[in-house]
Figure 1 (tube, rainbow, N blue to C red):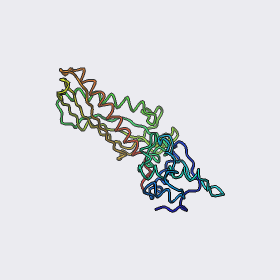
Figure 2: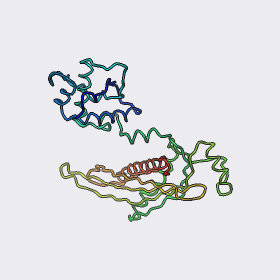
Figure 3: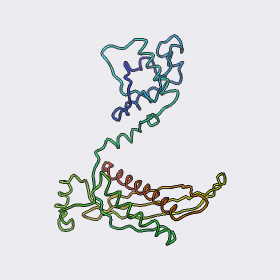
Figure 4: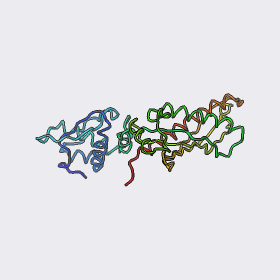
Length: 281
């Protein structure tokens, strides 16, 4: 268990912010060495556990930093505040990601990285899913249109390079052009529909039906110039839509459109996360 001398000299409480999440996690690990309120009472030199104040609403308060002033803080108020935070962390085992509005340390690091921008050009949209021609006709055109739409609207992607030199004729000049435009790379992107399925489920309690569709998409990017493997990204979605007693074409169209939008967004997000990872040494 933690000794009284291990306690921080001063605790500053406030809203959790991105730069402070690592410190909050560090304090949680330190506080986790105490097992209960009695131990905290003994460590802090309080007469009994009744000296511990009622903890505040934890959703609004978290430790943001630990400060060490010139003179140790021996006041009872400070010790009581430390005890509250200690008990909250140790008893409830609250992780930073469980605090409303907080994220994990890994997510904070990812968000703190520079947001690189890229040029994506769609080379082809194909289907490798074992589905009926009717279903492919329903899904594939929507997938093609949605990929084009989301790539064009994404703030980290560019889909046109006016005045760009020919990458096959002068690769170094093309790379300098990308750098001048603030782009970290250029890729030819292949889009594959890897799986798609739909089924109608009966809703016995309400007497209606539900349409369930599942979709998986795979992106593969080749570098420009060079056309070597650049990245891969997978996305998937599952949609459940109540449709009443009869399946209409409009129900299918709306449900598949929702599934395509979610799967494409997932695949693009996964691809950009991989492209933003630090280069392996």
